[in-house]
Image (cartoon, rainbow, N blue to C red; front, side, top):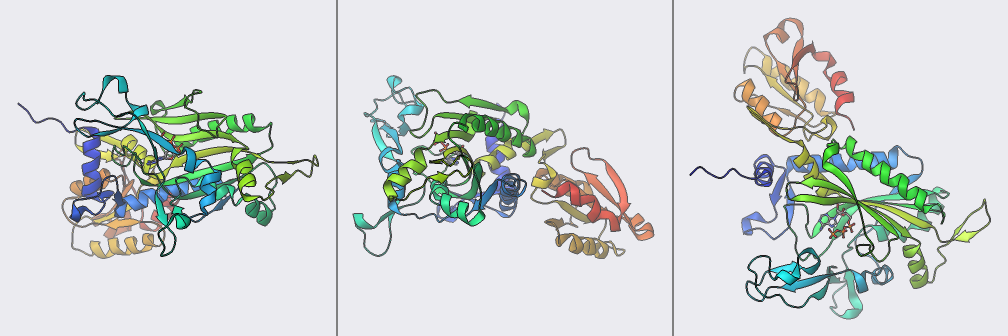
Length: 433
Ligand code: ATP
């Protein structure tokens, strides 16, 4: 019998480790469940995804500002937000094999999905990580690791509005870590207990919220083209009444077709005035907005777009992974690729390494590049294809004569010759976010 072909997820996990995208956290101690470390290439890809989001949300728009709020917040924030009371998932245990499940993700009538054994009654389990502020470990010193970045935005609504003199409608964007004590983490970095969110809260006049909700739904769906995700692998999922979170009037998920099925990568929510009203109530501060045009004072409505960096990184890996007869290629958008260009001397003599090093040094001022002189050029190309490097530059004997190099395109594998003085110009627009 032949060996079983590894699944796409197995191949991605193995490539991620071998080439330095993603490692198991604390691996030398046997790892820790659902925690991962990003390696030298992973951190580049992650930073590029964040920069693409930040650029489209903050730099390209005049109506959104960024912030970076602290992870630890006043514990009352989580009472106001509803998380202390309601951020729970129903947990069931199998009495036979002891496996643990989220009751809303399985058919509990059928018993344990693993062994068919009898399940316990569901218990509500709060997903917030709890810790203590200062040396005394008692109830009065409990603080939480934030389970979402959104609340850091709401509590700063008036700080941002006043300091930037913004008028409604406007948005606040933030990228940062969030923590959830998930009952069933899994599927590699799809669901972990520590992850990074990219959230944008758009504050609008009540009554205009439905229009803005439609607007942001479309904007966010279209954005995935810039992330290089194939349209046919994306779809919307509308939340039914029973799925809606306690704060939401309407919610759509953007879903991606992963090897393990269609799953959420981003949520767009109409959160109404729920959050600001609750913070107004719990803090005793007036959080209304004074509308100079109409002379009214009201609590703004919020349309939220919320996605996860790690989940989008997995999405880009899955979508970019391509097997061709002679090679494996990660077909990232060039500006997302961890390494923008690799530089090779054809042979290790005749002054070629010196010229190649000089090109490398010049490009290093602008982009992440990589110098490689070992093995045949064909093998060097394959190594770069596998990590998605869009361009490979080769210094050969003709370079010594006329100062030109070849630039090879990852996707077409075509080479063109250009002057070595024109390399930066060639790359600049193609690989810059
Ligand atoms: P689920 O119901 O699957 O637990 P959710 O609906 O609670 O997810 P949201 O609160 O809408 O998720 O989170 C917004 C985004 O944050 C998600 O679309 C996802 O990209 C990211 N995210 C949420 N939880 C996790 C996690 N545990 N690991 C990685 N990313 C996450």
